[in-house]
Image 1 (spheres, rainbow, N blue to C red):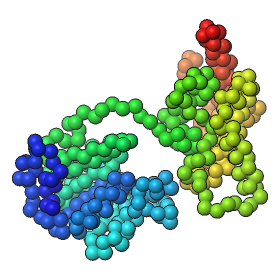
Image 2: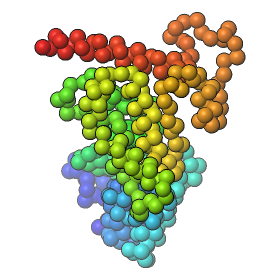
Image 3: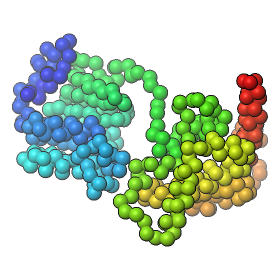
Image 4: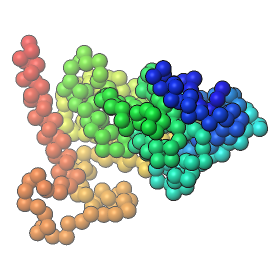
Length: 368
């Protein structure tokens, strides 16, 4: 097997690729693998078993519980450690004579990964799930005149492309299919970290409140205790923890009937608010594994929320910065520029529930 990677090229470009072969056998070839996730683990194993003895690995991430079901180079004791470091250690155990070097860093911003770094390698292979990072590596390979194999996967579909400067299309040249972005349900329910996560959660909530019962795409918004990050090795013995677990289980038993719960309570805005922002948040805080490296949410009931302004809640949440309005002259006069307080948002929530309920009832009547 030659390092020219001609065996995986398509017929139209195989001649060009063969002509660029550096003539090195795998033992003498130096390979850079960017990414040590699902594809990267398989790739590193295959390279090692094909007698590539000089490999470098770049990855920014650390190992999480959710990685263990498919990234076989990692095990439970590796959680929290660098993917690049652990992947190299695992490959070293498999092939003790291999020269494999880990780099824990961002391939885009880390100053170590400049043009001279790329020029050290005979072949670069992308195993990334990030479009911006793939674009960056593509450009660096073009500038350094190094061959790149770009790989990726979506669901059950995978792709691999050979990129050679002046001989083939590059990653940016190929039009990307437009696909609807999807998000992990457990992220939406339990640990949203981006504004788009909150928007998706709101869509789920709308479907639960006013959507079609037969819609196959509807998702419950109640916290999901099947989240892989919430799994624990041993049962908790502390009395308070047991109480929290029992509470969480009682809430979890209601998760599949949220729609029925809403209708049983006659769309009462205050009860819905308390369920979503107080009861469900208490359930989330009982999942202690989720908050080892994240900021824990704070439950908020309706009676307190309706009286809160932004400053009060910032103090409660121990925020690092607090935005204040020193006097009324700084408040914009236009309604769409108004800086709302938490109590304002609570009132909007309740008003919206009531207005949408009226529309829902009208639609139900028209449907009959």
